[in-house]
Length: 292
Image 1 (tube, rainbow, N blue to C red):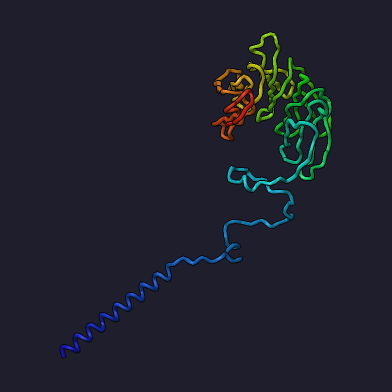
Image 2: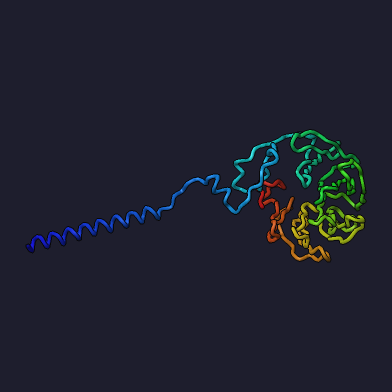
């Protein structure tokens, strides 16, 4: 009798254990997330509204921000040539047109190209010397150019019309519109009587083309760029110094020293950092190793 009682107890214990394991297993299965593609019904019931497609996708390349990780993806999209030495290129703000200048002994015209097709769409002629730099205004209405002929020329490029020609004391090789487009900065050689201080950056009002502030520098202006908010102007380079000026009053806030000349400068989008392109090592006046 006792044996039967013990057998019944053992049987109840085993069945209870099996039942608990089964319940635990079922709970685990029910709680496991299921990855399934969304259905049309689930998208339609979502709070995000999807507008209907009205136009076909553009055949033009997608514009992306290039980072160092993407260098291996890059390839030549379009290649169109121009004679002699290419000095500068600039895009319109809508990326539809690119302007270029080249020349050493001839062809001092500004050439305009359609970006997508590479077709020549016009030239702007008027300079009589090397055109060193060009820039479109932020609104895309104006194109400015600087030359060794000691002039700054302002163009209504779309209509092929020269709007203004500014005379400078010497050759001018760098220019930049302020981010808001109300000021044009021009860098080059100043009057030559003081050979140790014969360079400057001049600023002009775009509305009237009247001169505003003159920022003195040495030798020539190889690099020049505005900060994104327009509060600072970075310029210099031929003297091996790059100055950071306050644009409101022309005060030099910093002088960035280099062992060799600086050919270009850029300011980060947040305005916190300046990068300069210079020479790290030179031998017999030739640069053997460059640096940023």
